[in-house]
Image (cartoon, rainbow, N blue to C red; front, side):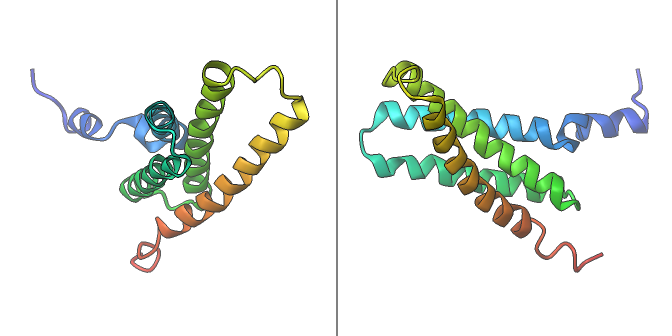
Length: 139
């Protein structure tokens, strides 16, 4: 059975790779797993920056590959990946590791996650901007 040209193109470039949410979820889940493993393996607090750095680099690389011209898609994907990884780690620590998720008030959770969202927003802005450097001039 012969594949048509359209069918062979679809096999090379999956439809889900064209959308920001599947890309972000994949990166966020992998990043969250790396953060959780780092928390389990080491007690050094600064070691948590290693998987976060790897997540940012992987997000940057993925955004360069998909070549979205819209800043909003790049920002959304980067921010969602960061927050999925962060919330995964937050839930792991709150439920499994420390078991204090119910002891902290709603306000306590809100400001912690809000602070991480602000940090993630700044990093995502930079990643989304830098991922398109050199492309907009080529047109």
